[in-house]
Length: 72
Image 1 (cartoon, rainbow, N blue to C red):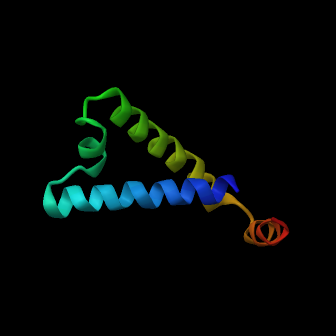
Image 2: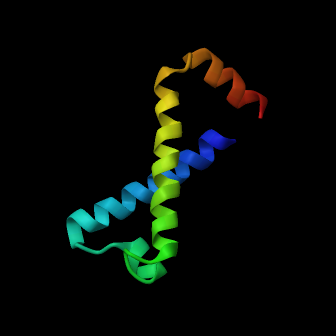
Image 3: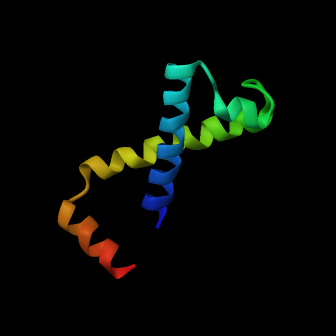
C-alpha cells in the first residue's frame, strides 16, 4: 500500500515538474500560496521523501513485489 501511495505522489510531483518545464507554472505553489509558503514546502518535502522510498523499488526482488501485491 505504501508503494502505491508513493508512486501516486511521485506522479503528481512529476506532473508538477512537467508543468513548470513546459508552462513555467508551479501548480503546488499556486495551490498553496507560493513556493516559499509552509504548505508548499511540506508538499515538496513529502514528494521528495516518497522519491527516496521509491528508490528501494529498484533494488527489490521482482517476484517478491509481485507476490506481495497480489496478497493485498
